[in-house]
Length: 78
Image (cartoon, rainbow, N blue to C red; front, top):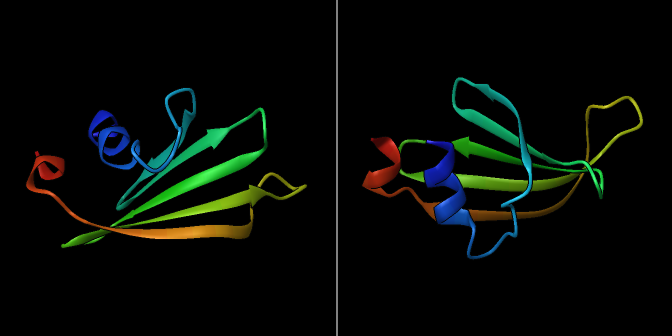
């Protein structure tokens, strides 16, 4: 599923080198260690919400920078 997420969002986000930090329920979190940013994918029934955020000093997700929405494609479900 991670590869499919990268394929869908890869057109808008340069995430090839980002590491998978967490996969939990309907969330996938990728982390860019170089620039201290996190990209969170919220997987809903018919759409994917993608939020780019900073990484706070305590290591948690910090301030949102940008949010995008994508229609969820059948391929992602498989």
